Image (cartoon, rainbow, N blue to C red; front, side, top):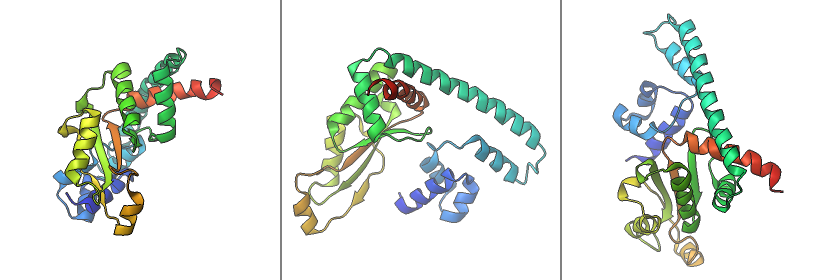
Length: 226
């Protein structure tokens, strides 16, 4: 996989570019681009803009699309509000696991409403997150993506992969393309014993419910746990 092209493709998709536009810029197949950006959800306005930029449509259905998008947006906002309310109600119980993971996510988790992911170098934090996902949402391994950011000067890549997967008790199918960096020999000595296995990111696929639940819970915790 071409990491540079992948990163460019993801950034362009976040900007609202179409698959065709990205294909012309990065010079990669549309199939590869589609795999790279499949977890990126476009905003309603970006969808409208894509539709109206398509010469086939020629603005013919612009009004109807806007109305449909508005209704669709309202529908999804209601769903999100329901999930936030569920999180708020769960927070009222002050269960230690729920409190600790929500606070952990507040500190270390992604804040974009379109992505639910937690990054850490401490496997214990990530284990706690997985227990939380299983207990409150029954999230199975096929909905977890694992991204690694590491150095291979102390441990080779296979050792690093096996370390994280075995510690988290996740199958290889969860693993995505790792980000591998390089260090000088001086830095290697300085880094000995510190994040030897790099950092691991756990991403919940189709994790809107989890994200909104946590955000709803944090509304309570921010006000009451002072």
